[in-house]
Length: 416
Image (tube, rainbow, N blue to C red):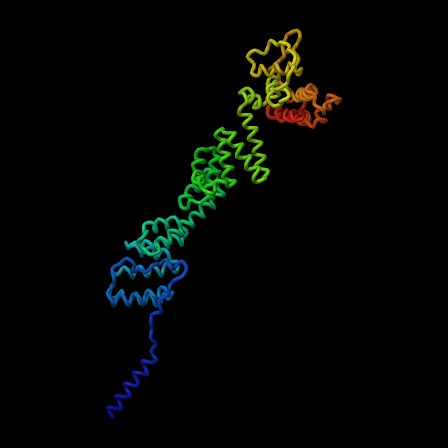
């Protein structure tokens, strides 16, 4: 009976054991996505004793598997024998980070001084949108943790893209700072060209040239954008001839109208830059005088400047110390201005009204033999020759600026 009783008891224990679920750790998993940067809390620390190490391995597998309940149960079991083990707090911080409980995780990490704690702080900063702070943490861990270099490369790329996007919509001064920072993360062509363009707009031509220097010994030197910027830098430095050569090549190579238009503008700027000071003063005058008009006429209309076989002009006594004296004498010589036979004055400082300018423009076309002016009444000459009449824009007694007068004289020059 005793043997039979013992056999029944053993059988009962075996049946009971077969009904009790056995909890085994999940197989080792490789975390995906952002969680793969939550490195093992044991990284860089002294090895645990075999029994504790086995238990922690099981707990950490539950963390990686996303089973927070079982992971915490296992960690609490280890804590009963090893209450001060830092890997326990790190593992719990990892669980908090996975669940976006960042404040709770940060409170645990502040008490710890280890590479893993800094990596976890970096991951918290990144998940809260502070990429710069995350990068600072990771740069301090370069070569210390297995994922630091990979993460640094990712964060630098992210910051580079963010800075470049911000720079494209920021004011020029702010964009320059953003682009310089972007280039510190990646020495790419696009931000360098954009930075040089912003500097040109700020008239910082020497800085713009320095930013382009790395491209000049590479295959990028022939890019249209690079050649355009080099041309604009040349203009800013007053090297108009070099700029004209570059834009001429661009216009021929690309066939883009904007390059041809800019080429014409630079030629005009070059011409203006070589003009005498009294010409520039006449152009900038808000209300031109007879002397201003004579200066603009001489330097804008080649038919006047290179006219030959002119008679000796009547001497005017009021041309001394007048800017544009020689141009006034030429205007008298071609018959545009008359000298008063009694006072011998021509009135160089007299203001030219819109009505008088209209008459002067028509008179120049007639005097210099424009084909469109032949046989045409004086009041019809401008319309016939396609020259803007000041009276179409201004009141008869209104003053005319040097800029407006210059544009009209350019139209006269085309007819001559």
